[in-house]
Length: 349
Image 1: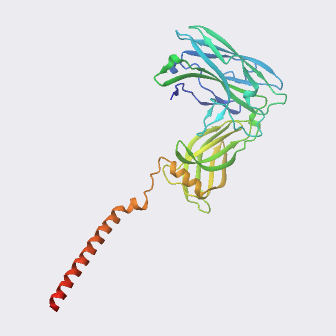
Image 2: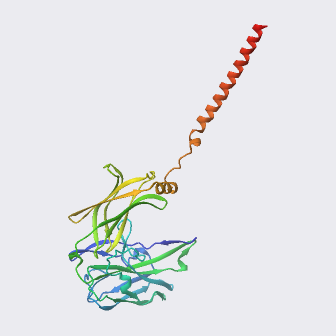
Image 3: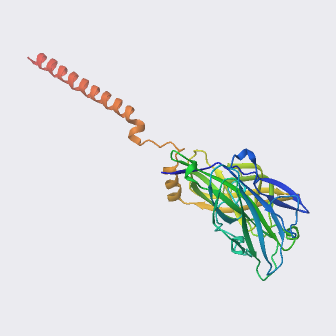
C-alpha cells in the first residue's frame, strides 16, 4: 500500500490588517522546505494589505479579474506540478487548512470560493531553471459579497522521482486568496454548538462538540475549554483545553475530547464549550445521549480499552482450587465412612 507523506511545512500566523484578523498563509518561498520550485504573486491594484504576499482583494459584484502567479523551477530536473484551489476549512484543533474541498459549509454561506475561481492549468510541466506564469481567473457573483471568503491555491509536485521505497513525497506550496466586498469586522460574531456526540477517531473513543461559525468572517478564539458532564451532575468527567484556535468563515470546528482509554458509559450527558473572542466570552451548552448499543460498539473497538475477561477467565483459578478441595473433601469423607463401617462390622463380630 502506497503511503503518501507531505513534507511541505506550512506556517500559520496571525496578522492585524486594518481592524480585523486576517489569515496569513504558508510562506510560499521558504528555502528551509527544500522544495524544488518557488511560487510568487503579482499583487494587483485592488490588493487591500500590500504588506503580505498572498492575495487579499477588494472585489465588487460581477467583477472579473485575472491574477498572475510566477512558478520557478530552481532544480536541475524537469518537474510536473498539479494546481488546485480549495476553500478554507477548520480542522479539529482550530487550524485553518486549505487541502481539500469543504463539504460542510454553513447553509447560509453566500458562496464557495471554489465556484468563483478558475485556474487556467491544472497540470504544468516546467523544464530545469525555467519559469512559468499561471493565470487564475475570478468571477464575482451578481450580489454584493458580505464579509470575506477565503481559500488557497495549492501547487503540488507529485513526481515518481521523489519516491523512496513505498513512500511518495508530495512537495507543495500554498498561495492564499481572500475576497472581500465589505468589512467583515462590521458583522457581529456568532457561534453555535450544533451537536455533541460520542464517536471514534483513529480507533480511539472521543466526544465531539460541533462548533459552527455561520458568518462570513474569521473568528479567533483564546482560552478554549470543552467539558463533558453527566446530566444533573456538575462534576467534570472529561475535559480538553488549548490556548487558542480559529474557525474559518462559514465552517465547523469539530472539537474533540478524548476518553484516554476509559470505557464509554451510556447515558445523558451535557457538552459545554467555552472560549474568549477578544473581550467577549462564549459559553455554549447542549444535552445529548449515548445509547447502550453505541457505547458497547465503541468500547469493543477502542484500542486503548483493555478487553474485559469473562467470568470463568477472571475466576478460573479460584474455581479450579475449589473443585480440587471439593474432590479432596469428598474423598476424605468416603475414606472416613469406609473406616467407620469396618469398625462397626468388627465390633458386631
